[in-house]
Length: 171
Ligand SMILES: O=P(O)(O)OC[C@H]1O[C@H](OP(=O)(O)OP(=O)(O)O)[C@H](O)[C@@H]1O
Ligand code: HPA
Ligand SMILES: [Mg+2]
Image (cartoon, rainbow, N blue to C red; front, side, top):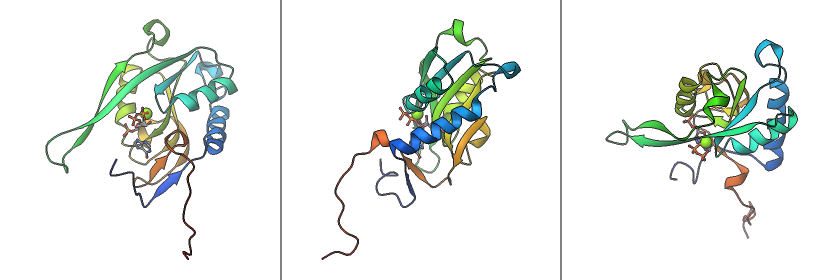
């Protein structure tokens, strides 16, 4: 939590913005399936990938939607040499997935790339797309919409609430 609040480089995304960006991602992905075809299914990386995946599935008229749950945590000794590790808690239907061909895997963002590294190793032929990307994780994504700097923290609308703020020029 300490890296989130307060954060000097906060990128605050409204529901409207994530809706627009997810739709833009869907349009970019349209017809990009194997042999210029439709995608067989959308797989959301829970939990952040679920809202974008729903919007994309609607735009592209894909009714088969599954999920993969990846938990990431820090390991290692001192703070400086801590590494982000990822572990799969729930897999999608193996009969649906195969090697991932024709499958669209969606997440809200890629940061270090650890989550997607694991997912890609499981489904090497899947197409991996995120709405936002940071430079370190970029090589792990096939398609994304907006890049932000590595030291930016992205705040999603499901993690925020409207609240009163003091005027800039106090009384
Ligand atoms: O590229 P990485 O460094 O692996 O980070 C990116 C992942 O981290 C966040 O999920 P998180 O694991 O916090 O869980 P959540 O989606 O349930 O919030 C985000 O939604 C991505 O899935
Ligand atoms: O910038 C971020 N925002 C929200 N969740 C995240 N998980 C990794 N990086 C981020
Ligand atoms: Mg996530």
